[in-house]
Length: 117
Figure (tube, rainbow, N blue to C red):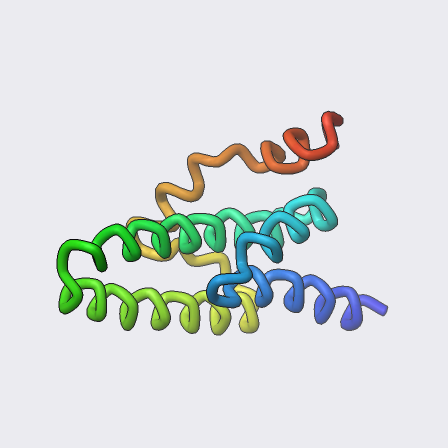
């Protein structure tokens, strides 16, 4: 039973790093797994990576070469986040992770449901 719960927990954390669709998966994870600090940690980082996608798009308008480098780095960060979630680690992604941790843990849940967890 405990092993099944861990797989479920890791699964929710991993989907937070799916490129482009992670805005949806992070919000779902933050609401469904609000009482699970491991999942909420990865949901917050996934939202930080999604914000970095927008930054990269803006950079692409100015410099295609620089944006290509950022896309490669961003895809690497998504893969690293998936690997960390799969192994059960809570490691902050440089820069993005530190900014994402400024999002209060229950903010998304409270914003969408209007209730405290």
